[in-house]
Image (cartoon, rainbow, N blue to C red; front, side, top):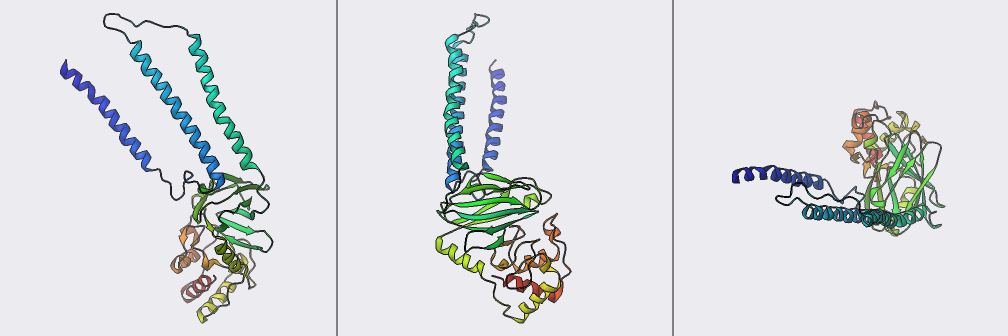
Length: 343
C-alpha cells in the first residue's frame, strides 16, 4: 500500500511541474518595454490601464471566492469512512440569491468606470491641441501638421510635445489600416472614405514605437512608426527645421546625387522642398536624412541601408510597392550621399 501511494504522487508532481514551467515560459514573454500596452505613458493610456486592472482584480477575487467555496464543500461534504455515498443537498434559496446578486454587483462595479472611460476618451480634444493628419498607406505612414504655421508633412516618424494634447485625424490612402501606439493607449481604424479621430496627452519625453494593428496586406507586419515626445524647446527646433528647405548640395558628390534624383524618376513619386520634385505617391523626402529609420521603421537610416533600399525595396520589405531602381555604382553613391544630407 505504501508503494502504491508513492507512485500516485508522481502524476500530480509532474502536472505541477508542467504548470510551473508553462507559466514561467508565458510570463517570460511579458515585458513593459518597448511596445507594450501595459506601459502607460499618456492620460488616455492610464484610463485604460486602470480599467484593465479593475477587471483583473475583480476576476482574481471571483476566482479566489469560487475556489475557496469549492474547497470548503469538498472538505465538509466528503464521504466519511463507512458512510457510503455522501449526503446530497438539494436547493438553497439564500445561496442561489447570493450567486445571482454577486455577479450583478461585480458587473456594476466594472460598468460604471467603463462607461465613464468611454465618454472621457471619446470626447472632443481640447482646442489648444496639436493637430496632425495621419494617413496610412501600403505600407508607410504620412503625417501632415495642419495647425497655423505648421504646414508641412513628414513620414513614419512623428514628433509631439510632452504634456500637450495631440489630436490625430486618421485617414487611409488605400485599404483599411489601424493607428496604434501602445504606450499612448488605444487604437483606431483608418477606414476608406472616412476620417476617425484619436487624441492623448503624452506624459514623458521619449521615443515610443507604434504599429499598424489592422491586417492590410503582405507587408502589414513591417508597417511601423516612431512617436517622438519632445520638450517644447526640442519640438520648436524640430518644426523650424521641417519648415525650411534642406540646404543646397554642398559637395560635388551631393550635386551629382541631386541630378540622379531628378533624372531617374524619383521626383515623380517623392517631394523635396526647394526643388521641382513634388511627387505625392511616396513619402516626403525633404528631411529624410534626419530620420532615424527608413522603410517605415524597418531599417536604420544608414548609407548602406539607404543603398539597399533604393536598389531593391521588395527584397527588404516583401510586397513594397516601390519598384527596384536601376541606379548603380557611382550614381548610387552620389544619390545616397545627397539623400543623407537632406536634414
